[in-house]
Amino acid sequence: MKLIDRYILKRYLGTFFVMILLFIPIGIMVDVAEKIDIFKEKEVPAGVIFSYYLDFTWYFGNLLFPIFLFLSVIWFTSKLANNTEVIAILSSGISFQRYLRPFLIGATCIAVFAFFAGMFIVPKSNLGFNELRFEYITKKGERNIDEVFQQINDNEFIYVSKYDPVRKRATNFSLEHFEGNTLKHKIESDWIRWIERDSNFRMTNYRIRFFNGDQERIYAKSRQDTILDFEIEDLAPVSYLAETLNFGELNQFIEEERQRGSVLINSHLLVRHKRWSIPISAFILTIIAVAVASFKRRGGMGVNLAFGITLGFLFIFFDKIFGVMVNKSTFPPFIAAWIPLVVFGILAFILLRYAKR
Image (cartoon, rainbow, N blue to C red; front, side, top):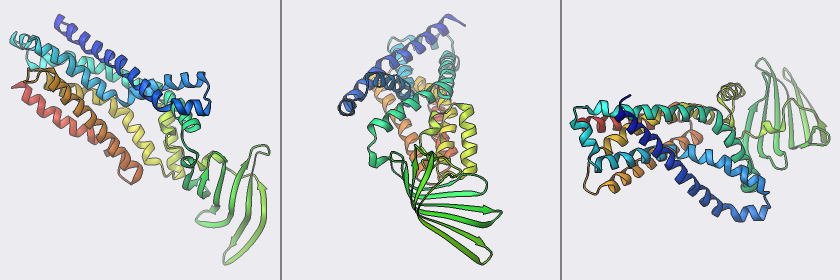
């Protein structure tokens, strides 16, 4: 590796980690200011708060990773351009493509780090971060889950119209048992609640219907305590659960959710696709930033930084918009995860061709 390569690579990685060290404390201070009253009201222990912000550091860094990367490259590349170092490098006979090499090496280092962090470190942080939010911050009314339908095994399906995970109870419960394509019996109740001390379910206005051809038998009780072949947590498809699993656990979880007919399967698939797409974004954003910031412009570094902030937030905006589309509709998760990269990849190709002229 030539001296110029080591120089650029050192500045690339150094500026990136300085950006992280600069912006993450700011993010923590903003979050503290927003939640300090809640922490006081709920009397959250200091150790829990400390653990929360350790997890928040990884969550926030992973969320704004594209902006940190983009701004760091634009910042130090603009300084090179303003000091005419880029002109000196290119005037020495080095092609723009060769000049780009140390940037791509730096992007590879960051992409590898982002990949392993996203697969194994960030999921654990997401677990602690989301659990504290759910326990202390999310309002009770917002925790209720509507219209839950789950396949709990090869022969049985459950449904509730509303589930309260705090009280561990649900309304309008039904369990259908099939043998082949034939419905054999169906359990219904107005309410179902998990009784912790007895480790069983308590159903109010309990009814079980047995089907045999055209014949039907009904057995009813005002209250029935029983054991069923599922956990009460099965009624709560936690939307963030996929984000808390490492690579191997996530693949297994997705297969189980697919077999159960989970309504959140597309959201889980989107999480898996993003585990791969985020590291690849390091290369595309690096190329765009180098192409934009390598030459002097009227307005200097400020114009380049403004452009970088705008593009960085646009990237995150598109990422979030497509994520909402997956969660609220049948939009394919594969397209949602990769189309921002395709769009910005085309932009990178255009800007790179323009920079080579």
